[in-house]
Length: 383
Image 1 (tube, one colour):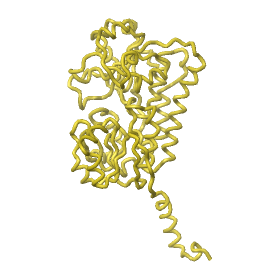
Image 2 (image 1 turned 90 degrees about the vertical axis):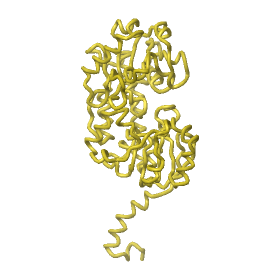
Image 3 (image 1 turned 120 degrees about the vertical axis):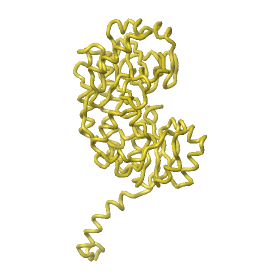
Image 4 (image 1 turned 90 degrees about the horizontal axis):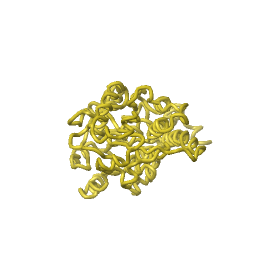
């Protein structure tokens, strides 16, 4: 007679309830974005997000239970992407009371307050690695029994995007959901890549993308992207990124004369709701629910500045703005599809990046979709 057969019904019921929990609790080994090997007890019971914008993946993995095991997070969602924060606040009002922390990279992170929350895992963006090493943060967290996992959707997405999604799938206990998100992203990127392969002689327009103009008065023209991140998205969409001609880093600064000499076919800028951090409030506010008419007015105002006003692309109206936060999430495929429509409007006339992003929300995310992620200077050429 087996053990199951001699157990009373009540005990069987209890076993049936507990079994999945015992089955899911296990030690997993993660290779994080820094190439470190980290063993954690998965799923983690208490997680501190060292970058709140990582919620873009956590929400896709956990849905309605997104915040069940998050005990604190960085304050960047409010300061860098207020509209997205408000979308999650509308669905999860308890996040207003979620402890917030500064940035490890600029020394405003409060280690003692973080340890007091007793997390078993803390995530950090990869750009914080050097500061974490130099400040001794890695050793102090280890001494407190807190496992540190580096995540990267920004510095080198080709190398780290899928690895980081899988790491968060392990930490939050739903590897299958993480794989589905990876598959969805691959499928949407292939929509553009497969069509471009069929047109190998297609002329690539030269594209200049200004990073976050109008956010800080100290920023002048012309901060842009090298071959990574948005620079890579431009290439994936069949464009030639001007910044890649000048440097190989993620970001870099051209001088105005270089931009005038390049005289790109298309000018783009990134934008978001930076109300929480901007000192001049001239940025193009894009994101969930953004007012695109107001965004267009802001974009027009930026293009009146030099050297933009001198460029042929601006004179012809070939000017666009894209949501800045595509650069730090696995939602980059939406930007690639939007760029493809702007670069090659006839070839991609049937592609609808707005519908793609809506489908991502309906398939994976616990918050409702609200359009507002892209705008063209000339109304009627938005897509």
